[in-house]
Amino acid sequence: MKTVFLFSGQGSQTPGMAVELTHASKAAKEVFDCASDVLHFDLLDKCASGAPEDLAVTTVAQPAIMATSLAALACVRERGIEAEGVAGHSLGEYAAMVASGMISMENGFKLIEKRAAAMGKCAETSGGMMAAIMGLPADEIGKVCAEVAEKTGRYVLPVNYNSTAQTVIAGENEAVKAACEAFVSMGKKAVPLKVASAFHSRLMQPAADEFYEAAKSFSFDAPSIEFYSNLTGGKLTDFSDMPSYLARHIVSPVRFTDELAAMQAAGYERYIELGPGKTLAGLVKRTLSGVTIFNVENQKTLDKACE
Image (tube, rainbow, N blue to C red; front, side, top):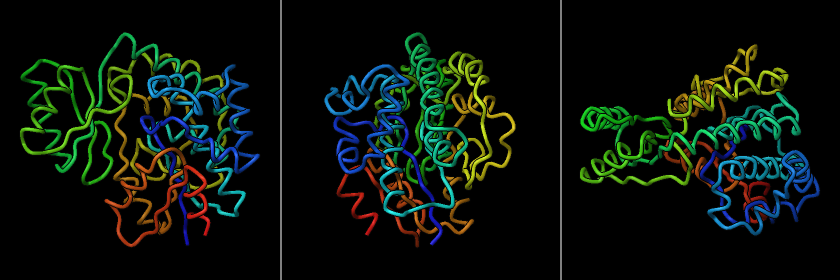
């Protein structure tokens, strides 16, 4: 059965994440040791005892989610499960890069430290917010956003194409709130996300510019397995300029629905989400039929996926 590992994105953080995985596996604990050495603080302690508001800070959330994802990866690989492909949602692409051999784990955490710092600094000055809209086609969501932007003179647009049933919008606070009110008046569900700014929008351009300069100091190898891309919505084949790719990634839409379609067309039948929560597993369930879906975030889900 052709398998793809999926890696969780920002907003999936939750207190206590990864604790059971690090108890179950020495390799999972070593992931957090590596991260803590890079970050110069005890990341596992942040996950184990940090309050929700502490974990939501971008400079903590991004490495914490990545470490939890890689800890889950270590656990399933110890149980003999491998994959022919990887895909991540937004932040999750960094764990996917490590999993595919594109960068080392240490460099992965160094890279995410630079990304989180740039995005966190930008979030403090740019503001902005994101919200998930359910039950409406993406093109109709785009039309409502365009109408709100014209009416308010503020910036809002769809940025995460997650499934046929869910699209995330982002932009300036006033415009996102007005759009959410419009969707609720249409009888649709609008849920603000636990993120610090309007990620994957032009409000993050200063972060993208700063991160590009930092990413140029890293080297990237071609992945050893198939790598599916948020930017293209399909399998990525050109790895010649990853710093530019990763900078564009910060300000570009996440085309996850297209990725899922491309993976299914390529014969992927088993989808395993690695990391906190089961958001991506839910998106797969709502988008694809005839596939097997698991998520791994603790001992119970690890045992179920490895049965």
